[in-house]
Length: 152
Image (spheres, helix red, strand yellow):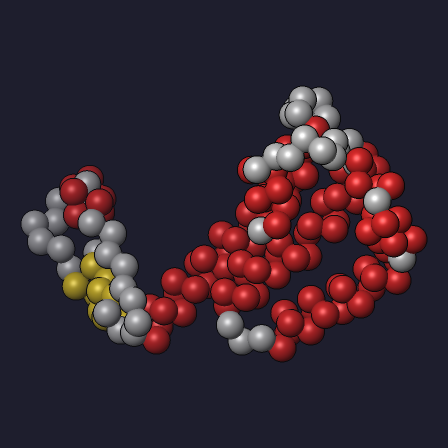
């Protein structure tokens, strides 16, 4: 969240990489290996210890991929040719790395809500497409799981 708001509300005082000379930047660069391992251990403990799907698949990917994306972009400059503005490469790379986890997590959250009976989902477009049913005159009812009805 902080990296995104930092890019949405730009303050021209620090160019990309300009914070290296600040006391915070010097401290973080000096101790980054000592900070990285406990940081990842805490993320793994939260992932395996939490039963909340929102934390697992929406928050932890951002926390996990933020330092990794910064390291990848600093070493390899993979988005330099695609995105000419250097200030947007980190958020784009974080999103590229996190989107598969967001999508999986969203599906996991929706399916869990359906199984627990908190939500339901109906695909109305399937009833508009008559080619799916062939020569059938009526739709066949297959069954029900919670509030989710299955038709053919």
